Image 1 (cartoon, rainbow, N blue to C red):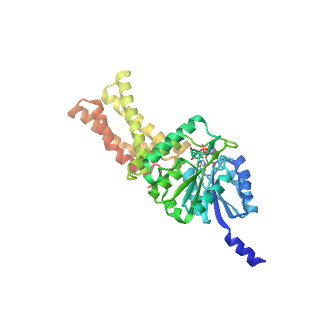
Image 2: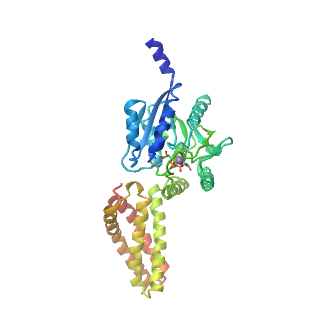
Image 3: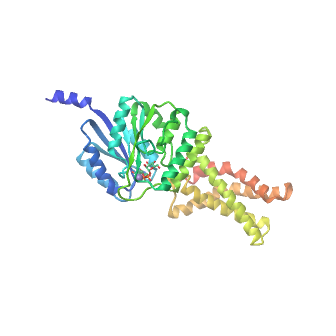
Length: 375
Ligand code: GDD
Ligand code: MN
């Protein structure tokens, strides 16, 4: 009887599951099949958001999607990162509820079900799977990572609104959201790296009703973790961004931190050239400034502008552009530092700091625009 059948269908909860993937060829199909088998109480939609994996992940998913319309593939060119993959999946989701989970087998579908039930029973906006709630078991995380995550959690709790201080795992990648109440905040999440939940909580400024369920965090099935230095860097930037009351642009914070490392490079290079190389300050300075600019360029390319990262010949071309863009203030930098040294005080530190300060603003604005083509 089609009528009762469709009435039954409308009663079923529409649940979208967002699965970010980056090189998960060996893990994604078993997980999709496990999720499809849950279908009974749910009208399921499985959204795989792949960042152009080189191992054929997307092709495998497309093949499955061809036979089962509940599976959808969002394929992105370039690697934009986990948090933005989650955001894109959630924006494309058509369910009433959406779940987010890792695609490598570390999160179990059972946790999603538990979270959905809790969300409905207690009429919450968001339920996160926690590795640190009582009842949780961590099987798949090294001591070091566990320690790192607890530390990150402490910083996160400190920097977020008080109404979220009862949470135990701000770093979690396992979530269930009521899309209607969460979507306005999902729109605002704008972040590199892994910390989607942290950002969502930060932009929602305490307005969401959030609770947790304990996770049994399994070891990864196959392949390796994608958490790297750049991901840690992004989290550091997120923290500083929150602590600046979200006033300073995230990328400018990153650019400034890299700039600070350039300051060290310049000071040390000058000292070495003057000490070991027996050069005069005026001779050592230009070489030190170019060394620092090159080091800034390489680090910014790997961290600040990771999503627009230049490689191969473009990396070289970018360096030339960066040095050109920077050369105007580099001349100002050298000129100002030399003048300061000659006329204000023969203090190498003060002289260089004066020059460096002038270049920061120009460099940030101009190189964002002309080197990495971002606004
Ligand atoms: N689309 C996309 N793009 N997916 C990505 C990317 C990316 O750049 N980087 C990672 N992923 C996917 C992976 O394929 C995997 O499905 C999931 O995101 C988690 O990545 P892992 O590399 O397995 O992360 P992990 O196990 O080291 O990190 C775990 O702990 C973190 C907190 O410490 C995960 O549970 C994270 O979600 C969590 O934030
Ligand atoms: Mn993992």
